[in-house]
Length: 380
Image (cartoon, rainbow, N blue to C red; front, side, top):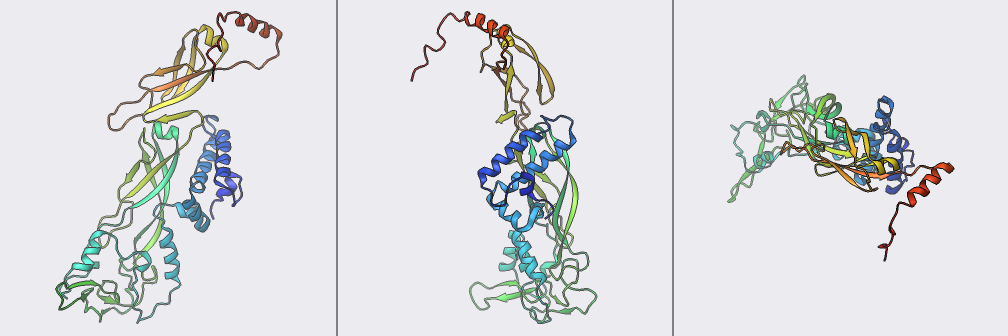
């Protein structure tokens, strides 16, 4: 395993979901970039912690990680296919092999495959399905980003794993350096007629040649499956204001097409890690901001961090703890309306922790300013 997510979070492999969540929150508070501005190590550590939490907080993903490690979360990785591919690699090919070579990667790649397989003509003049170009399969990949990256937008490099057409056999699964013959089962059509003499006669892909219409030794590079796995690094752009669960399309980075067909697309499913200071609800943002007793009584101006940098926030005199101030148009961007939500600031009055007698005497003077019982309506 390239990364040990349990070690990153400081937990055992038998940790409960509650223990995983507690460990993540503790580490997130320590390493969050907003708490350690300009610290590259903190930024890298936070991404690593978020990646580990995303994998282990979901039971299904956790099972995948326990079986395949962090490679199981690369774009295009399919756990079932990986298991089947291992079985395929251990399979002993022979000239009389009559099993379906595409079984390890799923017989059907699209709805068109299903209909072509069931309702197509069985004529020998018809071209093999391998001789028709077809778009490759789309793939999905979950990624986690922090809240500020989702609000501001970001560009990052992403390592993805995907299946592409084998360069040696051009997707046929046949070793081109050996002898190639016309498939005796289908006569080179790639199809076998089914249901002759019945009201509904149709054909299916020939199991013997996998629809190629040809027979030969399995390709040594892809072990006869016609595809090979590659890993590449791509540059992805996440737009500002993106929400939890949204998808970002990366054109042409899915599985390769068949015989000159277009590549499928990669869809990134966005997950947003919780922020220790800011919460998002729809397009509005919420933050608790501490103020001093003096600022609450006399008012004042404070510098407040927001998405775009900093603003000068005016605190009205006689502000109560829990009072909410609104910064209009300083929230998250809405892609449909092109408008931004609002930024709500909740004032929290902080009392100094001190034994200074002068401060205590000053507090007594403040106490005299209360003209009514502030708890008179405190009844159950």
